[in-house]
Amino acid sequence: MTANDQILDAQKRPTASVNVLEPPLDKPEEACGVFGIYAPEKLVAKLAYFGLYALQHRGQESAGIATLEGDSICCHKDMGLVSQVFKESILNELIGDLAVGHTRYSTTGSSHKANAQPAVIKTRLGHLALAHNGNLVNTIELRQTLEQRGGNFNTTTDSEMIAVAIAQEVDGGKNWLDGAISAFQLCSGAYSLVIGTPEGLMGVRDPQGIRPLVIGILEGNPVRYVLASETCALDIIGAEYLRDVEPGELVWITESGLSSFHWVVKPQRKLCIFEMIYFARPDSIMHDESLYSYRVRLGQQLARESIVKADLVMGVPDSGIPAAIGFSQVSGIPYGEGLIKNRYVGRTFIQPTQHMRESGIKMKLNPLKDVLADKRVIMVDDSIVRGTTSRKIVKALRDAGAKEVHMRISSPPVTHPCFYGIDTDNQSQLVAATKSIAEIAGQIGVDSLAYLSWEGMLKVTGENPNSFCSACFTGDYPITIPEQVKRSKLILEEANV
Image (cartoon, rainbow, N blue to C red; front, side, top):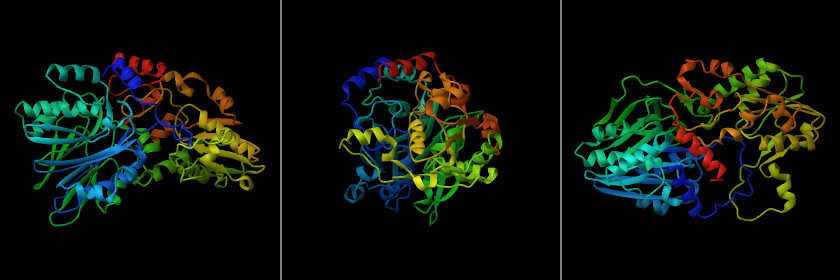
């Protein structure tokens, strides 16, 4: 959709509710988590529920599950957390041979129920249900093409555009596989998809594989297959990780088993490096190891690059902790907990007092005064986007008695916006794009500030450094971003959309 479409849509929508107990994270926000299972003899909706529960960190705006059995489809989706959207009675009504699930944080399309997923569309071959993680960058041209072909849209999401494109190809006479592959040729950008049809379940990644998608096995006779954004969603239902869906690959899961189709001649792997640094859960597996292990190595490398005299190393809960442990291991400076996270902070419409609002960060992170008093502290975090939350944390540490506060970031400075499914500010709002490291240090109030080098971040992956997208650090986008899309992002931000 065009920028004007988005602005008009935002003007029509009700004012979004604010989680007043939890300050906005000074982090990029992930787009979505997807889940799919083909297992006719199992309670697929309940398994999808637990899979989404494990993927809740990838999106807290809305959740949905669709089940299919022959020509029959059942779907329930709503705004809220997985545990808020579903209850036992609802899951008992979602009957089918397969299930497609989604948990969402919106990056394209507004924040209301109509845009919750899975997207469901009827075709001449029956219904399809599509769950999407990522973001297309050619939505303006794609929507025009689909509308010229007679396509109608009920939402403002690029995910529905993909579903409509598949439906048009199928209604034109193609089967599910050929229709889907033809539709993907029209799409440019990041998309990891789980698609349910009356004949089976598809898992698809774009030619760069920017967003993750894994395959799991449920042992039995016959063996059944599961698709998920991360391996943590396999673990929770007792499925065994088999492998990743490859960039430019479509896997087709039916009663006959799993088949693979590579629909791109020369895919170029470009997994988002931020998936490894921050987004994915630390217990998820990528490149044959837990991301916890990678994040510890980030901290180790950070200590080699930017050591400073201190009495205590601490991480910002929870995402900064593994890197802080690694920093402590290499530096020899003791690791300790300086902040305690309130893990039960949730949504509320009760306004806090003015004094509570001024304390800000303490609603979620409370400093340990006896640990911090008169200490030189190294505070490790995984990223700084705007600097607002970091400034509040630093002040809280100083108020608790810290003598010095040194901040170390286990990733390079974020200097460019993401267009592939992560909600980041326009470049002018990214603190590292407009200020020097010394200026950022002054703004957040630390005695010193250092980031991990881009080279160090890639080195400790142990993989080919060219196999990652790190555009948010370099501006080197692996998929060309149309100028109209760049301008749209700026227009939307200036309109406060």
